[in-house]
Image (tube, rainbow, N blue to C red; front, side):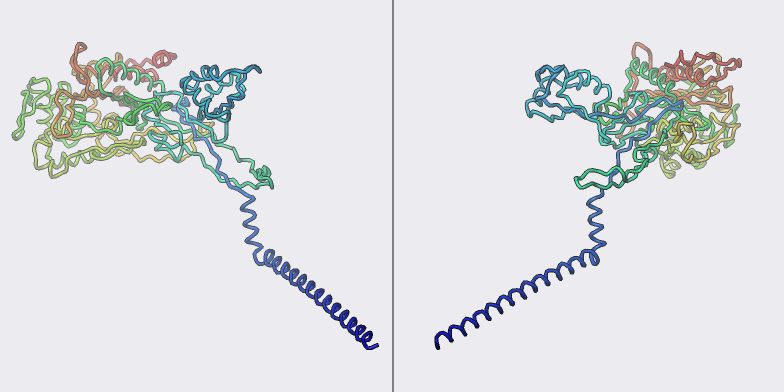
Length: 607
């Protein structure tokens, strides 16, 4: 009885303990669930309320992307709209040797390489070596032209893949080397390296806007978020003042004379004297901007604006104008030329070693008399003379819109004033240096009534309707000489062509003014190089008209020989004449007799 009763009580207590444990476990589970739910609620509150805005920004940044699409550069055209530089789609080619087939028939790697080699301008061996490296996805070339692409397509080889993406463009120059010194070039990374491509970077680069895209769950771009004008380009073109017809004529004339006289280099410049617009600028030797990587860096230098030289006798007309303007002389004043003159311890002689007796200012230019010029400029006080050289902006840049222009040199005032030889040598164009474009600019002041204008080659940005879209920012011309002085000197220069050393520049029916120059080349160590000279000629036409042009040609180190002695009148003047012949037809300039060039003659003369 006792044991049975005790067992019954023990069972009751055991069930009570089990029930309590179960209750405790349930409470624990519910507690955990409540805590978990509370944690989730807190986390949800934190995510949606506390960090909601920040997390939303993070999500959007991962779903959206920004891109700046490649936008082609604006084209460059000449004054008549002929394309000089433009962007063209380019192509990338890949090879998949395991897929080499033609008309569904397998074609060998060797056959493919032999067909591709001349197109890609490489060797069969080079291509075969690439084909052996891997079975697919071999890059054979990029930035390929449309012509190359078409020739590859014509092979009908299934293993050759051609791609063209938004980034695949190349800058092409249809005129090749005809205006390379002015245009410059753009490298494969689309960095402008020279010419107006560099100086006009802001005008040539189209505005590139950043576009925002949203991505789908698989990473693809959602097109709904692309604006309508995503790939819209403007139609603006950078127009230059150059006339490519005249440019070709100048190039041909310079090349022929350079070959004849075995010159080191040469240049031709044609400028509208009234406005400063450059109608032609040629430098030889030059380069093809389509193949710029095949040339040494020195070839990219535009001598006409980047290199200094002593102008020699071509500077004499400017000195005559200074003397006239200051009433130190008159056109009738006579100067003694005995063939030599002594200045201090120095003796200055005429280049022809002759004396010309008593001569006036026009004859000083006709004979290119150094002695006459020294005697003429000695009538001007040195400090006043120096002031006028500064007024002509010697020792400064002219500000042409072609990069890397060099700054001319002029002795400092103290040195010029204390040494009598300095004004004497400056009188015949030595002891100072300038660029060819600076001499053309200064001579332009004699041709346009005495105004110093800034030369330029960039006309501006124009749309397809011929309307200018950028502001014109050119300084006003600055009056240097009086119209009377400039006309008087121009008449004297006309006598140089008609009676003096510039006879090879004569053009029948037109009044041509000009001046020859045969200057010694300065040596880097001081003094002058032996048997090294620069021959030049600067001409103005037509004197019988108020609208005139300046034409300049120079040849560096021409070699005398069987063709004759190398002087400005024999080497450079014929180049200027050939250019002027075409300029007359192209611009329909009126000769003395008043007749107008016949229509069609322009095209026949200027290819």
